[in-house]
Length: 286
Image 1 (tube, rainbow, N blue to C red):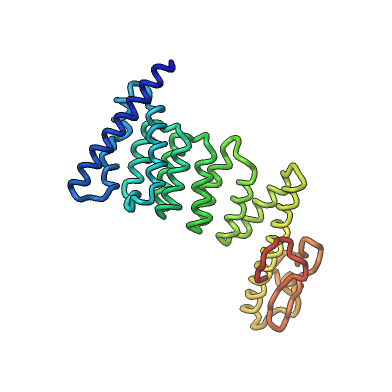
Image 2: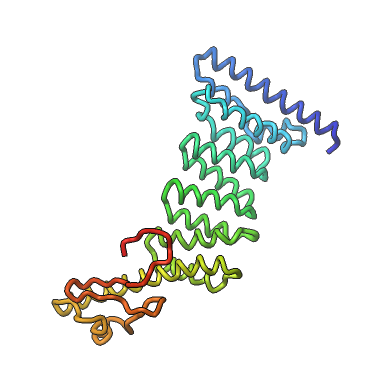
């Protein structure tokens, strides 16, 4: 692209955008509609590709810069009304490979407009057009995790992100933790153990071991508690000691915790607990 061609395309795009929005703004004002109605008249990305004279990426840049300014104007109270049109139908169709508008647009949708599903739709569109970009499924996963508390969807997005070459290792750890949040501690333990066994530095090894340590205890206590309840249902009373569970065939062996300590058992209540120190910095009802 020559400098003259770039400037010409930029002038063309800016003129078309300014003229279109100004005219739409005047029409919207006459019709008594809100200020955001002018955005409805912004042509689709497919149409703008035709009039961009072969420079759709440059025109996408122009509209993207305008959009940031527009959505930063808090005087336009109804500015979010056509938010999905701007990012999902205009910019992303002009330049589907343009990553920043997917990220910034989804941020505006989620944080400012409070429409998280709209943000996820935009990120999904970006993922379809850019399957090699791990940042897009990661952002979708983070939205599901941090805002929606939908850990199953978050896990699916994190899995999609971590399978892309170049994805940073911490995504695997977030993926493993999602199973813990869902309540599938066995799956979470398996993923954390895999991270621990494949860790290539002491920091990751320490972090993953803390999770393996605590999840192992939680899974053991859960399994032993279930066995105690099965014994109670069969015998009409809780076992006198955990070894009774093995003798009755309910478990193959009585486990010890990762520190080599025996689990604490209260025969009066049937409660199983651990005397070992928890390794994660969190308060949990064990």
